[in-house]
Image (cartoon, rainbow, N blue to C red; front, side, top):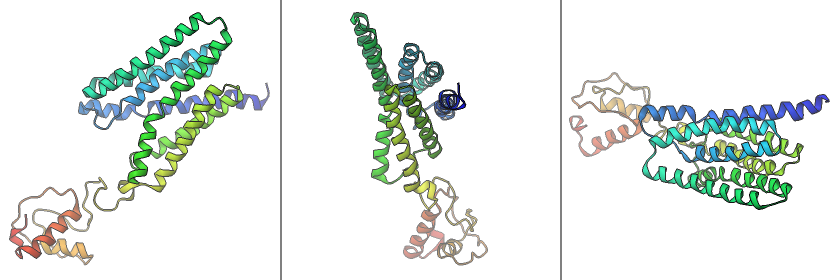
Length: 289
């Protein structure tokens, strides 16, 4: 075996397996945080469920096609995504549980129908080819949630919900597996990964085109929990004059004690606007709350 063959048929698929594992483990940290909070929050339990079922059929595909790389990485993925699915199901709402159950039952019915075809079809090669394309179809379903995410990103022009590192790793992962499918002439591997490659490239690009308010760090909505005007010490004794000085960029004077109630500050600009409103309408610092 030449050095080129070793790189193409050994090194590349091993690296592809590593990238798949990185993607599979990426939701684990978020799930652990959800378990601490005893709530899924914004965690979507459907993608791990879809991956679990897809990996399950690809394990059998690896056996049929005698492919150790497809078999090994999907066995690992089945274990990882099964754990994520079960643990997220415990925290899911009733609607989310119903969605997971519908997906599970739908996949099992499709698998059962294919089992009948396998039992009553005498052409083994046709059955294996059909199973490969069924795996391809199952694999395409895991891209349905990201498509809806992309639709929302283009509507809002805010890609802050997309992880740029995840999209980049996904780009390399799908590229390697699409290339590997071409090398072994198995297009049931090629097409879903080509589709995934296009989707990951688009996701990577939109994270730079529409970084969103969180990434830009401009005023309200940044989610940082800090005031916009950081040169003013916002305490219960901060004077109105100091706040207005910060608003117009002039040097902040020393804080002047004012009788006000303690205020929890979440957005500095909102507090400054409230101060301006009180100044214009009340004309009395003592009325500021």
